[in-house]
Image (cartoon, rainbow, N blue to C red; front, side, top):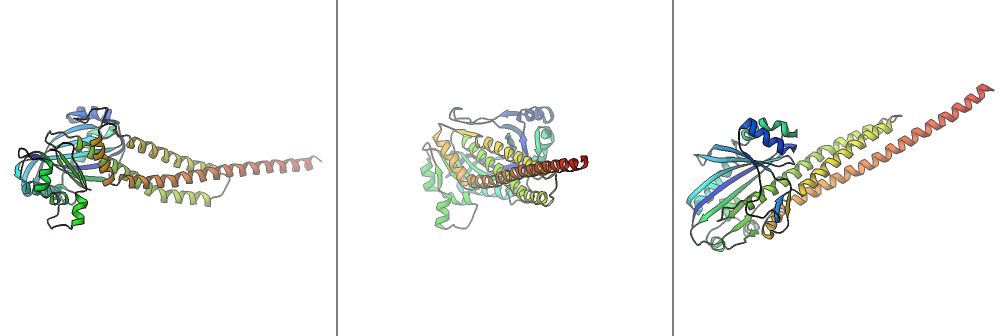
Length: 368
């Protein structure tokens, strides 16, 4: 079994900012970096079947020098900016005319060289190269951005006449998908191969948590683009989750501090806290809804199945549910603060009325 043409694509996604002005970013990149930029769309899929809500901005970053398995190589670098603040950086390493074991070795060595456990990788340098020209297009840039990584093993041409079924019968995909050299237990093998999809006899997609194998003889990139979008949605949901994790203890401290200081200005203090929490809930809810609509799937059943499986495999729904629970806590706190502010205002009004009555009584005695 020989892989005549393919590539290994290493993805690293960063939570670059709260939002990105893509129109401004396109102008800045052309003006300051002198690079090419274009709005992305799925290549082979009709726009009415599946499309981006707001098409991301694709940037060409040229060649990047890498050392894979002790051999110096050149990878093609690119980046894709999403309006909800995520940048996906891709390094593409071409593979030509190797046997299957050699292809698996290239995939695993690429992961060791520039994957999450690599000691020296080009990701931070690429991120700094992006941040400089694009700074003005970033709304509330992240000081220490969260990251996600994903590895794609893509085969575009096998030996003539080789179908996806024949490939599965002839080679073992598990070492490629797991990165392990030791044999895995049967249950682990079944779990790795569970998310497996084909549309034509000669194409195949196998998804795992941090890797995917794609056999695509027509050279289309729609499946890879959908997997990148799913990773971007996971990273953005993780960002919301961590932001709310940090906000909840701070919110409790502010509420306790406001309750300890009981004075005539309590109503104003509660109102300020309530407005702050309401603003936070509104911002996160708006961005979460935009994130849900980032990729619209209508008629392409095959890509819809791949996308749904990726979202399930990445456990995006679990992170989203955690965000919803924390938003519910903040909403309840907002309602309680709003009620306490109204009560404090009522108390202040009652005190004012009682003071006026007392003043009238005293005044009447003085007149007598």
